[in-house]
Image (tube, rainbow, N blue to C red; front, side):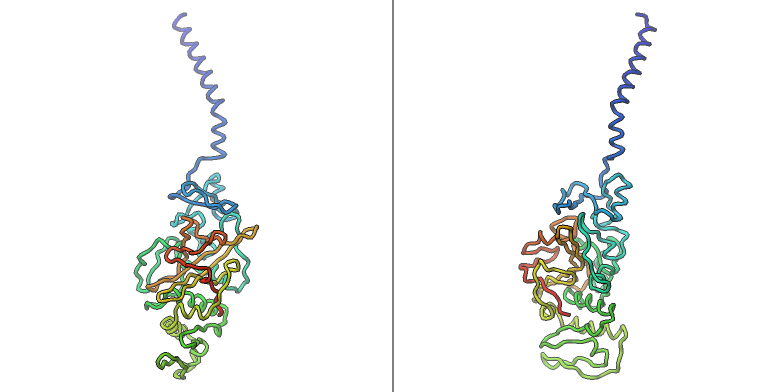
Length: 340
């Protein structure tokens, strides 16, 4: 065989091999186009399947159908996109309110709440920017910045007064102002005395005599923002977890709803508040918890220690003692409903 013939045969064989490779590899190329092997951005993530099971923390998990995250997923071929500094696929950086910031888990939808309900008020409450720090009353950062998933723009006074129980009272007071029901802004102090904003704005002030309180007229009618804040600061100074217990009643976990609190009265005690709820078609329920704490600090949405990147607490997973990022509630009897 001549050298020229050998070169021609080698060239033909090369073309044949190249053609076979194209035929074999083309299906894999199309498979990758349809199912790209895209890794979720950020560190380890976790998700929740339709049956409520928690996905492995080292794998990407799908976001809830019909959410902004889904649009991003579709654009990227189905991979989970994390756009939040929290590293959670359920948290959307661009969300300005509780409802738009935190999505429901897959298979869940938010519970129906009336237009002027506490649930509607909280869902539409403005939040600090995504990844924002929890600040103390003196503007310093709270030492533990790993307990929260978001921060509410709830007013915080400059004194070390608005702590855990006071934050719950502040939420209710702001809600009653929002609905125009200022007559409902009243809180128990001690000695069964009830501090009423309606009485306060009429010019009456609370006077103390030992461990008892009474009203005394000392000013004219004033419904200003400054008057309201002075009233709330007085309440914060004399009311706490014991006052919340007096103003609430026990409820069962199965009946939990927005506005309920897990409350351990004491010195110190603690309280966290249910600020949102969702449910699945088969009746499963989940809720979000928020808190203030001491020193006085901004009201913030808590993580769930049981799920690294899923802040929802699932009723059928809750057992006691119930562990939150900074406090553990020993018994179900600590779940209470305010009587405001």
